[in-house]
Length: 575
Ligand SMILES: Cc1cc2nc3c(=O)[nH]c(=O)nc-3n(C[C@H](O)[C@H](O)[C@H](O)COP(=O)(O)OP(=O)(O)OC[C@H]3O[C@@H](n4cnc5c(N)ncnc54)[C@H](O)[C@@H]3O)c2cc1C
Image (cartoon, rainbow, N blue to C red):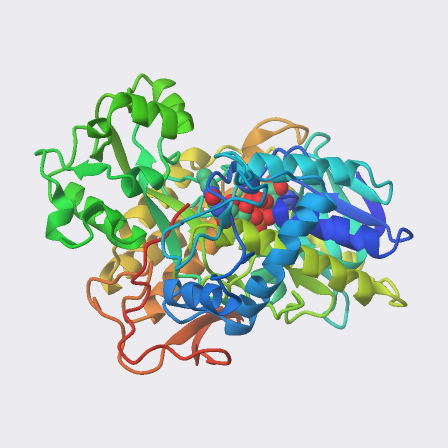
C-alpha cells in the first residue's frame, strides 16, 4: 500500500537544522503546513543532541565577527565558501539570543549574569557558549518542546526519506518516504523540500556520530542531480574510546582532556607526540594527533587493543573527577577509571565537512530543494572548528525555514510523475523475500573496513583505487542481498536501505579524495603529503552519465585572502 501526503514544506531530518527550520517556517505563516520527517523519535535522534562542548558566537568585545571569520577560514584550510562563513558568524549571535529568549534555552552564566563563553581550540577569543557539558540536550529539548507546541507542524517519526521526487521540469516535488513501523511507502508532495539529515561518516569502522545516520541526505541529493563539494574532507577525532566488543568504541572523550594537560602514550609507554609535533605535543591539531596515533598503531606501537593511552591521572584524581565528571562517568560505565589511570583511545570518524552545495539562503542547484546543517558543504572547508557545528545547524536551519516559507508563497505544488516513484518503490522493495544472497552485515563490515584502511586518516592513490574497487564489489553484491521477514519494523531491510546510501557516499568520498592530489586539513595523502602550490581549490562532484563527475574549482576569496605563508588548517580544534 502506498499512502499520499500533501504539505507546503517538507523537512527531512529533525536535528538542530531541521527543527530550527520547522520553527522558522511555521512562525513565518501559521497557515503553512510543515511536515518534519525523522528516522528516529522527535528530539532524540541525530548528533545535535550529542553536542557536549558548545556553540560559537561572537557576543562581546574584544572578540569580533572578523576574528570568527578568520579563525574559521584558517581552520578550514582556506577552502571554505567565504560567504557561507560570513553568514554563519554574523547570524550566530542573533540565533543564540533567539534560542534563549524565544525558545527557552538557558546557557551557563558568568557571576555578572552574562552568557559564559569558554575558550575552545583554534579560536582567538573565548567564544563558546555552553550548558555545562550537555549543550546539545538543552538545545534539542527546548526546540522539540517548541515544535510540539505549534499545531502547524506535523512530525512523522520513525519515518525515513528514501528518495527525492522531481517533477517533469526537474524541480523538487517532495520525497518518497518509508514509514518504518508500518513498512509502507508514503508519497509526500511538497512545494518546498529541505534536506537536514545530518550527513554522517557511518561508513567508517569506528564512529563518534549518531549511528542512525547513513549519509541519506548526501545520497538523495546526488541521485537527484544536485552538486556536492569537498566530500573527501572527513573529520577524525583523536580520542574515541577503545572498548573491545562494545558498540561504544569510538564514543568521544572530549578534547578538554588534552587541553588540560593529558598525556598520550603508545603501547611502549612513550609520549609519541614528541615525534610528530614536539612544540605542541598533545595540544597539537586534531587531524595531526589522530594521524599520529593511527601511525603508532600501524607501525606496531599500539596498545593491546589497537589504540593508544590517554592519561590524565597526574592532574590529580579530585581535579579530574570535578572538571570531567561526564567523561569520568562514561569511562566508569566500562570499568575504566579515568581519574586514576590511563584509558585506551583511538581516532574515530566524527563529521563530514563535505556535502551539498548551497548558497547563503540554503538554496541548492535544484529549484525548490534547500539544504542545511551537516548535509551541506562549504562552511567548514577542510576542517571544522569545535563549536561551529551546532552553530551551523541552527543558523542555517533558521535561514532555510525563512527561505522555504518565502519560496512557497503562491507556488503551486509540483507533481512528480507516478511512474518514477512507482519504479523506485519496486526497486527498494526487491530485497524483501528475495532468497538470501551475500550476508548484509558482512558487506557493511567490509565497507567500514575498506573505508577505514583505504580512505581513512591516511590515504594514497593506490589505497583509494583499492577502496573504489571494493566499493564496486559491495555495491554489486548489495543488489543480490535478500532480507527475511515482512516490511513492518524490518531492521535488516532498513539496514539494507542505509547501506545503499553509505556505499554511495563512500564512493563520493573516495573519488573526491583521489581528485585532491595534495594534503590539506583532514585530507592527508601519503603520495602528496603537502598542500599543492598555488591557489586552493574545492572538489565538486555530481551525478554524471557513468558515475560521479568530479571537477575542481578555485576558491573565491570574497572576504579574506590566505596569508602568503598560511599553513592550511594548522589550528587546534575542539568538539
Ligand atoms: C559526539 C559529538 C559531539 C559533538 N560536539 C559538538 C560541539 O560541542 N559543538 C559543535 O558545534 N558541534 C558538535 N558536534 C557536531 C554537531 O553535532 C553537528 O554539527 C550538528 O549537530 C549537525 O546538526 P544537523 O541538524 O545537521 O544533524 P543532526 O543533528 O545529526 O540531525 C540529523 C537528523 O536527520 C535524521 N535523519 C537521518 N536520515 C534520515 C532520513 N533518511 N529520513 C529522515 N530523517 C533522517 C536523524 O534522525 C536526525 O533527526 C558533535 C558531534 C558529535 C557526534
